[in-house]
Structures are given as C-alpha cells and as structure tokens.
Image (spheres, rainbow, N blue to C red):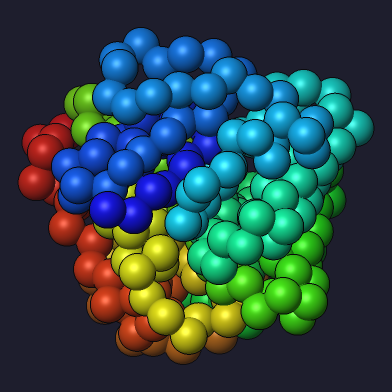
Length: 283
C-alpha cells in the first residue's frame, strides 16, 4: 500500500483530499499546523518552513500532495504570505528529493494569472484561459504560486522528480452550494475569478490521478468545473464585465467555463463530476 503525505490536510480542501486517499486504500499522513476536526489518519503537527521538520514529516512516503499554504492574498501581510508559501514549497520538494520521493503534487492557483487580486484591474488576453496564458500577478500570493511552479521545474531538472502543479480554481466544498442562488444572476459577483469553481471532491480525484500517472515531468494544469458558477451565459458575463476581451478560442454558446480544463482531461484522464446545478436550485 502506497504512503502519501498530504500537507494542509486539516484545511477546507485538505480534509477532502485526505478522505479520498484513505477511501482509496492509501496509507495517509496529514501534516499541518493544527489537528483536524475529524480524525481520518495520523496527523503530524509541523512547521513546513523548517526543513528539518519537513524531512521527518515526509520520511517513508512514496508521494506527497502539498496543499498547505496561506490560501489567498490579504489574509496575512504580503511578505509573510510570500515567504511562507515559497519556503514551505521549496522545503517540501527539497526534502522529497533528499528522501528519494519521486512524485509530488503542489497546489498552484488561478491567482497566478494575476486577474484575481490585481490592484490595477485587467481581463484575460483570451478565453478560455489555458495554461499558456500569461501569468501577470500584482500581489505576493499570485507571485508565490508562479515561483513555486518554477521551483517545481528546477527540482524536476535536477532530480527527475515528477511534480504536478495544479492551478486550482475557486474551491467549493459540498456545503457551500447552498450559497450559489445568492449570486448566480449578478455578473459583478465573482468576476475576478472568471466565475470559476471546482468541487473539493473533484480536486481530490485529480490529486490521486496526478500521483498515479507516470511520465508527466514538471507540468502545470488548470482545475475547473466544466461550467461557470453563474446562471448567465459565458459570453454575456464577458460582455458585461470584460468587454475588451475579443479573442474566443472556443465557441462559448452556453455556460462553459472560462478557465480551460482541457489539459487536465488530456494528461490526467480527469473529468469533473460535481456541478453546482445538480446541488443548488437556481434563484
């Protein structure tokens, strides 16, 4: 039975990832700064900015899923956010390399494209936004994700370790679908995230697929549901909030996601299974 260490496994997303790997019969260890509300597997409380603690936390693992981070801009000061997210990711990959761990998944973000937390608002260069879209962050959180992806590239070049950087859209746990009717008819809501979302259970499955797949090298992959989080057609959303966008690389005849998930489907065989329209009535 393979052993997987999940960092941040006590958090909103992490607990679903831990639960999924446990259900798939993996040996799982959660590493976090706090203990989880629900005990699903052994938990190690550790400071991931301390390399020695990271080595001990990863000892004996076959793979690591690194989710632990300050999860958005403006939660902590900019320099604390950057230092924590960059150093914890570096330490995870450094320890994994030193311990001979050959596969890692790290949580990147749609925020790396820069639109989400931009001080000077701007829209996408084209839609749907794929992994080749320019990454133009104006904040330390988005910048930390860009740096982490380059750190992953460096470790792959140096050691051959497979590192999958998942650029995750707006994370939605199942209980949050009840909130959707409050915003789905207002295009000004959630425009900075291009109205994206992705279910925690679908993210968890993507993490498993990324661990089990071979030959990926170091690669960045978007994760988003197939549709937007809105009851307004995608072209209308863009016309109302980002009218300057003129390049459409897909037809967009309905409610299609504006964060492309094609690469996840092609490389991982991933298919999002949970859509908000199946859980929340339209207001």
